[in-house]
Length: 526
Ligand code: G4P
Image (cartoon, rainbow, N blue to C red; front, side, top):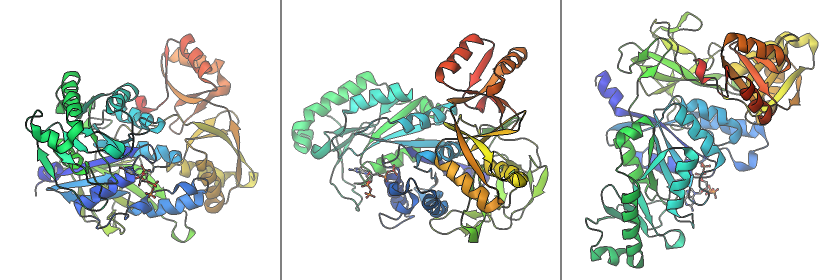
């Protein structure tokens, strides 16, 4: 198979959702279709159990298990599907954001009872920043959920994206009868079945046909009315708009009952983009370029003292990755080869000989990588678009053992390279502020500093609301930094960051400094 065929065959995506909407269940059903697993329940270990939310060691153990299933690959209808797993736990949201930089599209799962939830909004913001194509799956239609039109309105408003229903639920909850596929005018009748894959589809070329009344009885008129309304309100589905990330096709179904999943998967395979060109610091790199390139989007450190290895996740962007071939580590300006790269196949790691754009390769790492690092076949560009997002919780790192300050420095430097948290330094005084999305990371840092670097620390909460990167007129920024020097720090790349205490303070700063633009992500600079 030539390079173009390899690329066109691949679909690399992530399933994202607010916890409990059904991401794990849907992933599992996809794998069942793809034959990658044989029984339901096989993917459950992938999920961080709710009961363990306050115990980070327990979560780490589960994360360790989930490394093996970080990327799930299967073939379906001649396509090679790579599903990149994202942690459901809120405290690991940064991991999810970074994973989104490595996919070409996403499927967003929404719970039809709950609608758009907080984490969904944030995840969609990240998708929109990168114009990632999104397909929405409204799940749990077997439950008494919200009115589908209301849900669509909410999706448009809260997620700031045009939607287009592709299938439509016939009644809901206990009265749920099935879905009408708008794109090929057929009905799938519901038969609650958690293991068997239902194939019964009835074609209804004319909705006025009495067959419809026979099939769904009293719901037939409502469906006719709904479809008329849909055709009036929502225009034709436009694949180009979907690929540009401005329009999201919406499917309804029940992942648990394996209902509506096949339609979703098949439509996804038909319309989702294959590996796309990517912006680098120099130019746009096409996946079909002969020369290999890729970037690290995630680093997983094992906390188990018996296996203290780090795994770097490499997304291949162009050319062909090969085992034992020298590649150029751009940031370190060093050539490296990898003797035992691996794929993340089901529950075992398989040695990998080669990989193409869209694939994810696991590399054992002894501290050479940090997130965003680029490997090439000699060129010096770096891949763009690995943003830092403003953390939500800020604490100051206090060294408890002045004799060990070197260890502490090195430890915190390495941990933040892995993406555990963000580090901001303040001069003078070498104060260090740590920013995270969740409380758990502080426990992780404290534990790892002590166990891996022999350094002890404690954290003091700091009431900051947002970290803001700044662009604009140099003089204006200099003046602002002088005036607000107590709140000015530098991030790991030496960018100036303003730590605003409250939203009011931030808004005032924005109003009073029209020559400065304040950004809550670092994306603008790359
Ligand atoms: P997540 O990965 O997004 O966090 O969600 P997950 O798939 O684990 O699903 C969360 C809960 O919702 C699970 O129940 C799951 O069985 C249920 N669920 C998923 N899809 C559907 C659906 O289509 N209909 C209904 N009624 N429920 C669905 P749980 O009790 O929390 O877990 P479990 O004991 O079933 O594993």
